[in-house]
Length: 215
Image (cartoon, rainbow, N blue to C red; front, side, top):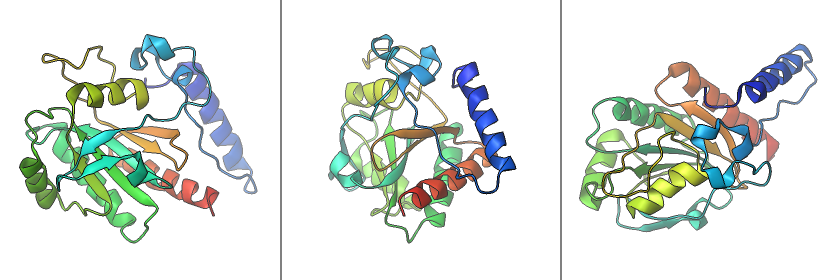
């Protein structure tokens, strides 16, 4: 389980009650470190139960451009972690991300961010080739590389995407199917299995809820 059992049950109860009342407004939870399975959270953050926002980042995209939080200011976006030579879950995840991209093709509020977990291998030319093959639209979706420790710290301390402990060093490696939904305030609003069709449908629904919340 990604989330603590009691917290997950409370979400289900809230969802069920809301479904019974057609006038109830559906709202997505805001996730803080204390809401997750402790295995997903760095021990320095275990007790944090409010005001968690994702950290600033400095990455290089498929066009060799520097990408930071400024490029996602005022955006709802989905994050995942991948590598171009992956032949198992990554192609499925990227194809599913492309499907979500297609659903919000003309909505400038929605963006995507993929971070390579093998940044020393995934050069800009490789990212460009990968982006072209997968139908990535540059203005909506950044496929990125960068400093390995920085990327791994983001995965573990900011987006809570992986269980495995590590230091971001040479022997460290992470591999996760998780998609992370981030709102305009840099808050985590959902984590999903990016390989599952049912989860992709849930993301589409949840994005629309966030869009409605900001109207």
